[in-house]
Image (cartoon, rainbow, N blue to C red; front, side, top):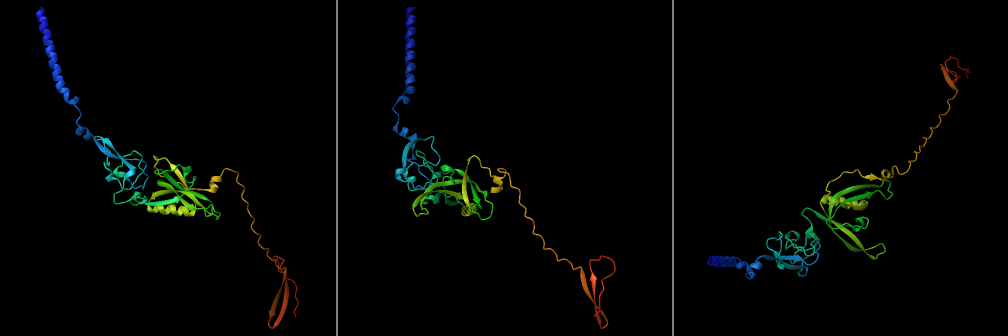
Length: 295
């Protein structure tokens, strides 16, 4: 009985050793040192922005950096080397650490500047704004705004009127220029640039020339176009104070007709003889006239 137990123990140890050997053979490739070439194949270099790159910027060597990126999660249109992006213009603002994608860069031969960012069929139009027009400084590139114009406020005889002339237009850029003030001193003037269809550009220029421009910031998810009749000053003030009764001016009296004469003199001819007779016109009906005398 004792010999049989020892035999079973030896057999169990042999089988356990064989199982451990086979498991080691299976796991050995996984435990081996990683292959450098295989590890390198798992990532690909991707070019990122080293700082914020505004629209119109020409990408330079100092504006970018390269990092390894997982090969199975590459962004569409990525760039893998500096040679692919240096010298190209930025079409849309690129934030720091954001990949430089082909969709945000101009063609290599296009150069830089604002002109490369203008969509086909659009025109770039810039006009000056202030804190009021620019919604207290909250208007930024990419925001959608409506444009309102107020005209007739110069005392020209018409009622001041405000009307919405453009809706849901995108702010392409904001910035500032240095212009002389009325005293001839240089001052910084903020401005906003829009990408507009030609007919929209015409309306905005006419509105800016004819009255006061105001921007109304709108929710980017609100894309509906509304139709409004505009508003006049007298409509705004209606109901704020009791209206004064209209003053009616009496029509000028017609000049009084001269009183008709009560007696008229009538000449009577009988052949070569002439006579006069006086008639009393105050008598109505009746047949008698006054007497007369021949001469």
